[in-house]
Each structure stands twice: as structure tokens, then as C-alpha cells.
Length: 395
Image 1 (cartoon, helix red, strand yellow):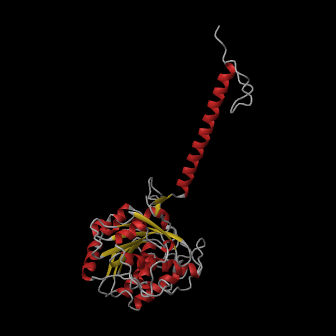
Image 2 (cartoon, rainbow, N blue to C red):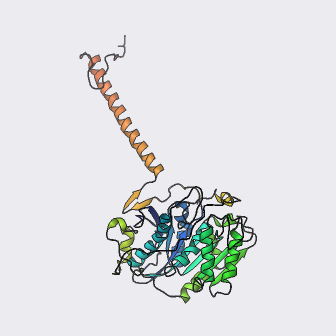
């Protein structure tokens, strides 16, 4: 697995993703991509999760765990009192995903891209599929947090911190934006998170009858049961449906019309280790500007979760950094986190101070030996002391 980090070519924000190529990867043949979004509050541990990236070999796909600008962004849609983003930041968060996929398509022979995730990760996957219809072929979403925190019923979802985005998902479903895509929604019948189950059922009512829409509701499951990684891929034939869809829909993703390759290293979203594996199939397409403009609805800053079901799952390994967690690579070098950097600085300072203390001790010993052996007073000698004392001579 490789961690790739970049500076957004749209607003200069830093972001990163964790990427794994399947053991069967052949640069001369198209390969599909499984793009993973984390849940609310999760960090790098969730998108670097070995359980998710094991799907690379099991399904023969490239797995990409996207950090997406921290723990609260979600394509720039999540609006809480702690996460007030400008409209430019919200737009750039969406453009960055398209840019990553465009750069990937320029370097690799990419087939189809499936976006997946649980909770807010499932929400982001559904949003991405209608915002980037030519990039995303399907969605696998467990307990997608549509209308999360809402005090009103869907489709209005009043009070939800993702109200505008949820309404856009419903509008896109009504307009047929998902009709040719795989949309597999896994719902938890005992989900107590405000607004979420109602939002999922609203989406199901709009997509009912679509050829590739799949709905699975587990009556005894709660929201927190899906926050521990990609284990839910094993339930209800999720993997089998994904394989069937991919077999029925051969395709090839190419960079967006008007996209141009980065003109300098700082604009590359893929580290050299990844670009070299792709075979450098960069296509010469005129124009610049990434994905151009995307529709970003007015995002209300009202409402909060009436029940904090997120806390229930936070004791798992994806909420706390495990020992030896993957640090992001920049080129061929490891970029340490703040904690690791502090530890290294502390160790380095300790070694320096220790070396100085040992040097002073050796100097005092030499000075003491000279003085006690009849030499002149060690005052002024390096590391010496005018009050040095000699051991008592034996009687």
C-alpha cells in the first residue's frame, strides 16, 4: 500500500489517499477502482484499513482510501459549528476527487470506478455518483447518512447538517441520475441516528424499479455495526452483486474533456511510485481547469445530531491510531505525523544533551586526574572545576 499526498490545484489545501494495487495488476489491461470514504470522525486509520485494502486482491481492483481533507469534510458538504467552509472550499473538495481520478485515468488503464463507504462515507459516495456521473459507475453505501441530524422528514430534511446535499441526492434520483449505475444500499433497521433511516427509505422509494438498485435492510442492526471497516461487504451478496455489475458493464475511464496533465511536480496527486506503475499513459487533452464548475447548493449551518450514535463505535481500531500505523509518503520519503515528529525531536535532543553531559564528565575526569597527579589546578581547563577533590590516599 502506498500513501500519496498532494496540494490541491484548486485551493492549495493538503490531502492524501492510501492506494493499493492488486497482486494480479497488469498495466496493459484495464483495472477497476474501489474508492472508499470514511465515516464521520474517523481519520487515516479508516482509509488505510488493511481489511478494506485486502479487497484489492480479493476483487482484483485498485483500492483507494481517501482522507478527504480531514475528519469532517465529506466533499465539503458537512456543515457543523466546527466546520464552516467557504463555498470555494466546498467546491474544491469536490474538484479534488475528480482531479485524483483524472490523474489516475491518465496514468493507468482504468475500467470502472465504484465509490463506497458507511455512514457519512456512504453519503459521500451517493453524492459523488451524481456530481461526477462520467467518473463513477456505481455506489455501495452502508447506512448512508442522508438527512443526518434532521428534525424534519425527507425530502426536506430540516435541521440536517447535510440538508442541501441530501436534497440534491433525492433530486438527482428523481431525474434518473442513478438509473444506469449500481446502487446497493445496506440499511440498519434499528438505526437510531436522527433522520438517517428515513432518508435512506426516501431514496429507496425514488430508485425502486431501477435495474441495478439493490436494497438490503438488516432489522436488528444499528448504525454503529457498520463503523468497523469493510466487513459488511460480506453480507447480503454485496460482493457478488458488485462482481455481476462489473462483468455486465465493461468500460474505460478517461480523463475529463478539457483536462490537462499537471505541469509541475507540486500538482501531481500521485507519488512517483504510483505513476511509474501505471505505465504513463498520459493523454494529450487541450484545456485546463480540472472539472470546471460543479453545482454546490446553499449549505445550511443549522441543526445538530439529536442522538450521538457515532460515539458507540469509537472504541474500535478505526477511531484510534494503532501502533505502527501507515505514515504518508511524499515521494520515497516518509512524512511523519506530529506525534512521531515530536518523538524524534525529543530523542534527538536527548541524545545531544546526553552526549554533552558525557563529554563534560570525561573532561572533569581528565582534569581531576591531572590535578590529583600533581598537575596545576584544573581551573580554566575545559570542563574542569577549581574545587575538584581527590580521592583520599590509602594509609
